[in-house]
Image (cartoon, rainbow, N blue to C red; front, side, top):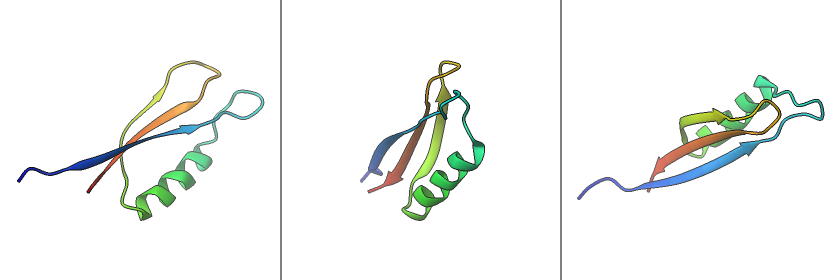
Length: 59
C-alpha cells in the first residue's frame, strides 16, 4: 500500500505596511509542526501580498 498524504495551504497576511514578520511565520510553523504538518514550500508572489505555506502530513 502506498503512503497517503493530506495537504494544506496556509496564508500568512502581511502587516498594514506590507511587510511579513519572520517571527509570525515561525510561530505558525511551530504550531502546525506540533500537529504533524511538514512545510513543503513557501511562495511570496507579490511585494505586498501574502506568503503561502504549502504543507503535508501522513494520513
